[in-house]
Image (cartoon, rainbow, N blue to C red; front, side, top):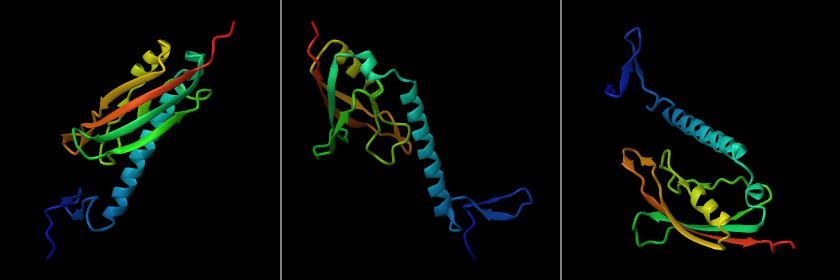
Length: 158
């Protein structure tokens, strides 16, 4: 006989498997993850649409790229690195980078305030660091993202 410790009783007291058991549990789990990803995407898109445009906020900005290196805490091992090139003419003035750990929930790196402060000051380079505040199961994620933002500005018109 099958162990029923992971089963639950329905209203008629018949035992039925919980969502994550052997009867299609993987399919239910995948659909739940898909729905969560869709919600995160929708929320991110809404925030981007509501944000002012970068070109309107910093009209003299010609180019912007952000070099990102993310790793787990103080790990000596190389993390994931990439360069994010910003299309200034169309980009929102919002700089939120998702956490690189796929198991992280409600995490990410919002570096908008630091980047916008540097751009408004006309800085051409900004080095920064941000720690993820998400959760991996019941523990803090604590992945660390180091970034370098490099900006180029248009020459002032006389």
